[in-house]
Amino acid sequence: MSSLLPIIARFLLAAALGAGIGYQRERAGKAAGLRTHILVSSGAALFTLASVYGFDGATVDISRVAAGVVVGIGFIGAGVILRGQREKEVAGLTTAATIWITAAIGLAAGAGMYLISVIATVVTVGVLFLPRVRG
Image 1 (spheres, helix red, strand yellow):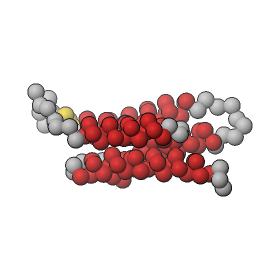
Image 2 (tube, helix red, strand yellow):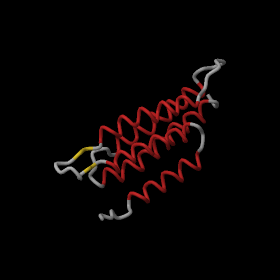
Image 3 (tube, rainbow, N blue to C red):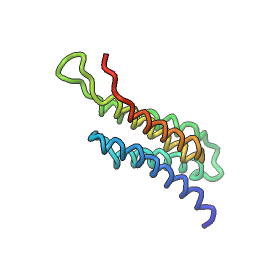
Image 4 (cartoon, one colour):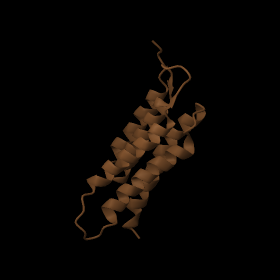
């Protein structure tokens, strides 16, 4: 049981960090909010944990999981980017970017990189509070 605690801690940290970003997006009224970001972060962490601990004794390249998550999240991100009525109008780029970095944070937490995953979350939420500059 004690060997499961670090695994559970990594998963729960990923979920909590995803919740931090998702809460900000929810408060901002964005379509991808709390639940989406929790699921993206904890899902990425679970893929990481499964690749690290799930193939006992097998020779596997665990870095391939990270690459797969990045590609999969790219498809989700592309789905939230919308083109407006006018040619120059694009919406959803920031939401797509938050989904992308939330997956990266989940991967980092799942890999046991606690400090950098927390720092990345703080930076991400801080960036989301910056005012939009329109040129």
